[in-house]
Amino acid sequence: MEALKTPTKINTFLSDTATTDRELDYSSKDFSSDQDVRWCPGCGDYTILKQVQNVMPDIGVPRENIVFISGIGCAARFPYYMETFGVHSIHGRAPAMATGLKVTRPDLSVWVISGDGDSLSIGGNHFAHMLRRNVNLNFLLFNNQIYGLTKGQYSPTTPEGTTTKSSPFGSIDHPFNPLTFSLGADGSFVARAMDRDPKHLQQMLKRAHEHQGTSMLEIYQNCIVFNDGAFELFTDKKSRPRETIYLEQDKPMIFGKDNDKGIRLDGLKPEVVELGDNWSEDDLWIHDEKDSTKAFLLSKFFEHATGENGIKFPRPFGVLYAVDRPRYDEEVIRQVNHAAMSNGSPDLDSLLRGKETWTVE
Image 1 (spheres, rainbow, N blue to C red):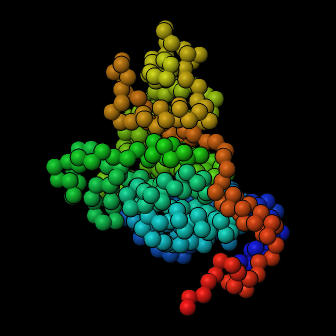
Image 2: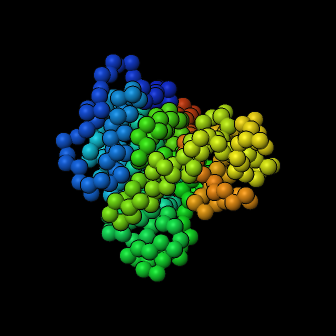
Image 3: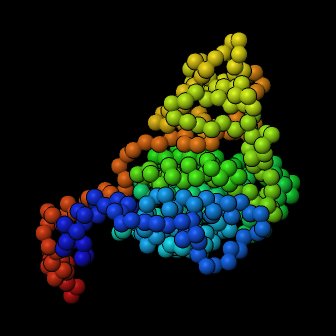
């Protein structure tokens, strides 16, 4: 209720950003806590942690204004290892806690750490509503396609037919595609990176921070114990050129070992073509992050998808979709501010004894 008495203070929140004029001289070591990291040796979480610590000095936010909030799972230990504020919260409910924090403290840079089980199973509802509301926070979805913390059950992103401890005859569940899910929930920033491409991951983390709204970054993360090699096609140096495509705004979609393949559109039907006699760069699809229809097409480039010519579609990495639209946290503050300005200072006694109360005799 204090906020209602001081509308001018609320107004200052609306103009705040997570940046500061204070001179910051951080290195990545300044964001490394004194806690022993307790992930399995070789876990992909290590490199994601390292790249986040590397990027933090560049985003220009004081450590005391940065908060990492996690749910439950292997990735959820992340806040312990950051020398920032952090919350190890409730299974699947990190988006709810992050939303409340961002609304009350819009000056903070809020990062949510979640896994495929945490965000797409028990937390699926919270994940969807965070996206549609477009809360101004950064959501990092560590996807290893398995429940690692609980010893290897199949997760909501495990491919069909995968043999796990809970699916000895092969999983018969159809998996979620996190990017398609996010676009379907009207997410305003949808991107993908992988743990074993540190340079590109850093670029995506910076893009996520710059976005005003919910930035959903899926990160392929290798679980070395229970799902080792799940993304090897996209990380191995030999197979990566033919299996991946890196998206760049306003650039033609080219991939392949010798940049000899491309993607063109026949109407809204994507097609993989060989560059050469019949097709040139001028014929290719030009990537546009603001086109939701084409972002959806890109999100459906999945492992077994092949064109009519039998060539498999590459897996897209980078920003599929990024647009500006109203933010939930900003609109909440605007409404509260408007109500305070319209109604004046609140009187608790009048509220309790007003016409909306009655006496039970």
